[in-house]
Image 1 (cartoon, rainbow, N blue to C red):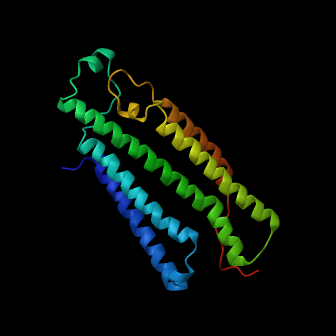
Image 2: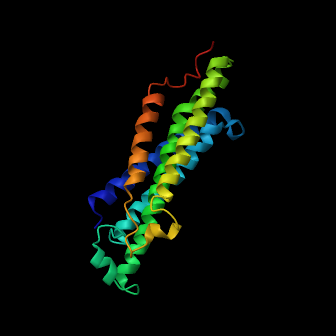
Image 3: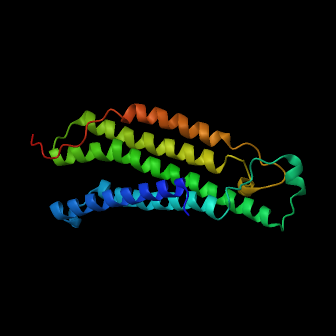
Length: 207
């Protein structure tokens, strides 16, 4: 039987896919696919990334039993045979967790892009108001989101240093992976404090 996490994860994924499908259908019916804007396409990309992230989170437990190259003593690392089943599970689990972190980060930044830059840009285009200060703010928003994404994904992928295979190395201990958590959470709080208080697009209002 599926555990509570699996039921919740796939239920939320189903709700997300359903809402995006309804939104896409509504946009298709109202403006046609040729008049889709960037946020319409980004929403579809986001739901694909969300599905990959959910699949990775499920597989970590279902296939690799939650094992990775963490929570091991130096003695356990040294004596674990490379041809053992547990060794393979820990290496595979570490790789999948790295994929999960990366897809989760990409999903977050796609949603931030929708919240901050793209929705504001669409509000300008649809209302046909060419305010210079709004254009500057939108451009700065795109730059800020892009730069913070590069910083965060670099912190995740380079968290164990070089070479890259240290991310799933068993012995010797590749080191702590706490840096990506700190970077991601810090930048999350910073960005949401900036992009959170935004008005929703009101394309029905004629100015």
